[in-house]
Image (tube, rainbow, N blue to C red; front, side, top):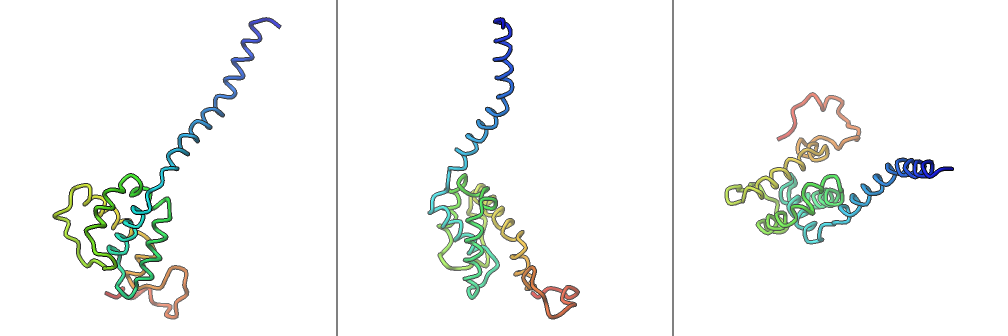
Length: 157
């Protein structure tokens, strides 16, 4: 075997292992980003905001707490709020009293970043099927209803 053949084999080995090295390198970068976990204070602040801004009444506090816990534990839903905007979430949560459902929120004194985050959070909360069904006072998704014509009637106010 000549020196030329040995170098050619080394080059082919490097080319053949390049996709594997690239995949491992990308996974290592992704792994380091996913290890950034929001502080428990930020999660509690987000949970407090969800309970305050959601459509639940004071009597439905357990329903609100259950939804907030599921929202905060989901990586998909919480990704746009934590850990990147944790400080904004915490500053917003300090403006609301604990355990009180907000009827109205004055956006005037809020900064632009706070206003955008709050608007995005409310849009995301109300986009979920279980919240929309709760607001419309419709039966929960997947549950059989006694009245077969319930979908032809206007939602309760």
